[in-house]
Length: 252
Picture 1: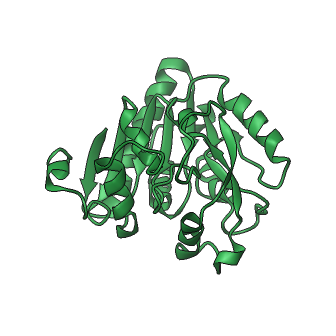
Picture 2: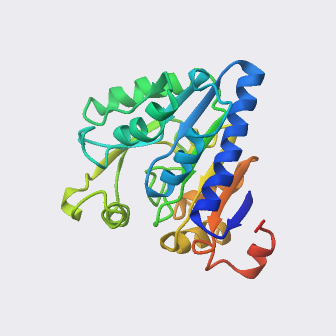
Picture 3: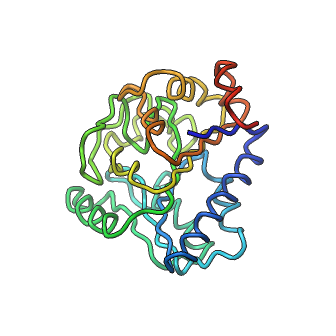
């Protein structure tokens, strides 16, 4: 895993967006299309602004897939990831081919249908983040590292749910759904290239556990260290607890 540390979130977002844009352009040049897994959440907002403003991406040739979605949450809710992607990626960029997870539908059927579309061809680029509890997508610890199912219905732990309140998406813990649809860990690892954005001091403990601890379901994002092409984007705040030896191997 290549780790890069930036002075602030704005610089991180610019660099990550540049890398994502280059990967999308390369895929389109090689095969006439690019298949892209998009992440959501507070850590991705500035990145998506930069990415949708990137030049020379033919977004009509980009097919977008959705990492996760709350169960039972209407798309009109501020926390809906469907609404988030429509407002921050799909509409601004003019994406015509996209697959959104309907958390209000039959969850098992949604998982099957989205999984079939996802597995129709390889994924070129996956964007992910790291949760405050180390989660990857909505795979909270202890995460399932074994299932080959592309999407799962998962139970959200309290730490994950509290993060959503802390980021301002919900007024209190009672409002946060207890279940979600999530792309599985093994499915994420099937992407050819993974970009992981994890800025903010709130992520520092999780980043340390995922980089310096063992590869374990207790620290779900640690599994990214097994993938051959992952770049982790940190700011100085999220990298603040890392050992000097870890930082010495990073690009700053």
